[in-house]
Each structure stands twice: as structure tokens, then as C-alpha cells.
Length: 54
Image (cartoon, rainbow, N blue to C red; front, side, top):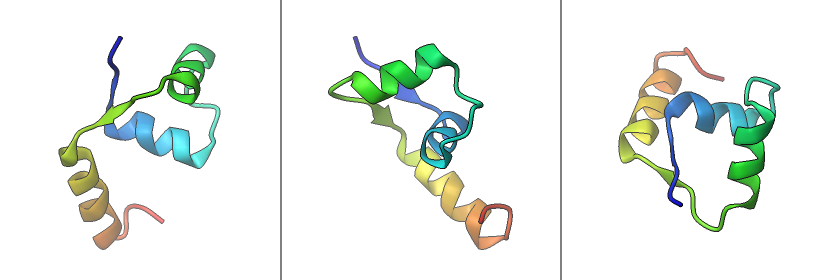
């Protein structure tokens, strides 16, 4: 199966918060391939540049 993480899920995964469900965390942690849209990386860069992300 293929999975595409949205921006929130990607940030929550890397931030190690409890906002991801156990099932989502298990999938992201064990799947061989997880996809992320280039738009998510763009969104993160914009939010960081305007001070909305640390």
C-alpha cells in the first residue's frame, strides 16, 4: 500500500508529539516507502520564514 503524508502528519511525526494516532505512527514507522508532497515542504518553508514554525 502507498501512503502520502499531509503537512500536519509530517510535522507531528518529526516533532514526536502524541497528535498522531498509534495506527498512523505504526504505519509511518514501519512502511518501506512513505510519500510527502513537495507542496508540504513548500508550506513548511513558508511557515518557517514567517515565524509560524520553530
